[in-house]
Amino acid sequence: MLDHPFDPRRHRLRKRRAAAGPGFRDACFLQIRAAEDLLERLEAIHRPFARVFSLGGGLRLRKAFAGAAFALHADMMERGSDLALDPERLPIARQAFDLIVAPLALGWVNDLPGALVQLRLSLRPDGLFLATLFGPETLRELRVVLLEAEAEGTGGAALRVAPFPDLREAAGLLQRAGFALPAADREVTTVRYRDPWRLLQDLRAMGETAAFCGPVRPLRRQVVMRALQLYQERYAFPDGRVPATFELITLTGWAPHESQQKPLAPGSAKARLADALGVPEQSTGETAKPKA
Image 1 (cartoon, rainbow, N blue to C red):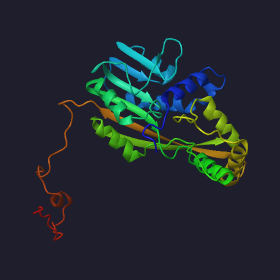
Image 2 (image 1 turned 90 degrees about the vertical axis):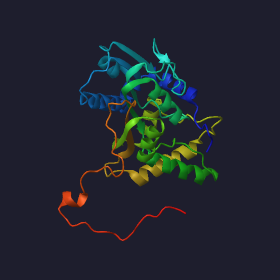
Image 3 (image 1 turned 120 degrees about the horizontal axis):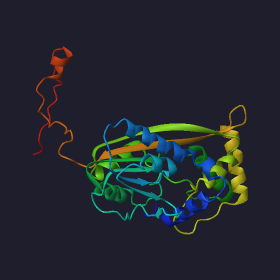
Image 4 (image 1 turned 135 degrees about the horizontal axis):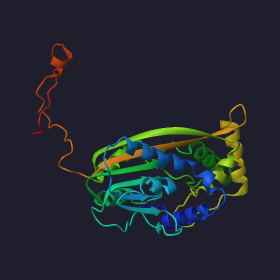
């Protein structure tokens, strides 16, 4: 795979075009769900955040952070007074914010580790970062039938659905970026559509169609129709509706601060596990030896 498979500018243009379309409000249910989930998580953290940066998230996050002393909102498309921005080149100063939230705004970033480093550096010490990414289960049905239909019709297949990091990879990216107390969790949801064509319409209406770099060979009509046929035959429920799987991975990380809880050093325990469990201690008979 290319080092830079995505075209972020193409993605921003598609998001802008989708936001101006009549179906955007109904189709962006995943973005709304991600934003509301992050707000629920914030409600469980009983501390104020005076300076807030919201990367995407729309009206719900704008209203939630309206009372912050300094809140900067940036969307992935040019619209009104919003910042049109590339997450890999953030125009914000170091230690500028106490809280950064990014619901589904980092999926088409080529250098995700680099973007996470920038976001971490933009946090004040003990500042919080919350983000939502699509996980690898997202659109797994569509990925399978597109690959099969294109290979069947043309003898080869191009990547049509973006690759997404899994849970372990996402948590590792936070750690690599220097976040303290990194954590990641996932939620998999299934959306029922009247037919596969309606799913494709939703993806276009929400601006989440593929935005790969360079010239992309368009799908032939017969390939698309074959893919939709395979989708219906393979995945349809008894009532004729079809499922579309979406996996949302939520990332949580803190800018390092001396007040944060630190893991205990190896060998620093003051009580034996065997004593705590009330069982006699047993030896495995194995001893780690240093290398000569």
